[in-house]
Length: 99
Image 1: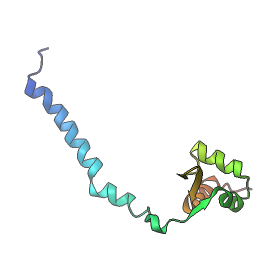
Image 2 (image 1 turned 120 degrees about the horizontal axis):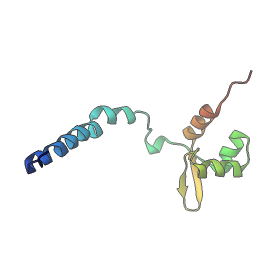
Image 3 (image 1 turned 45 degrees about the vertical axis):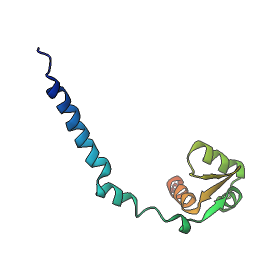
Image 4 (image 1 turned 180 degrees about the horizontal axis):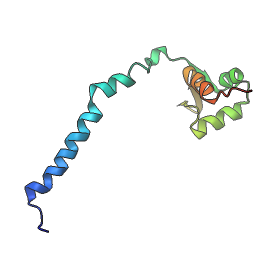
């Protein structure tokens, strides 16, 4: 085996960089994720107590879900706010049909 020339050594790296760059910045990948996200002005945030009441569980259960990463939340000062849609999404994922 012979050692590669400096020009040959760089070409595989530049090809791999070119093959990964268009995929990460392609308009298709951006447009697929954008419609699912509502503008922040349209997002309704719920307190932990409101989420607990809606789900009919304790506040501690909601805190556990947030800390485990199962329920997305935003930290505002020392409290958490849960996007209303995140609560609905969690309930849909967690739903099981009995019988």
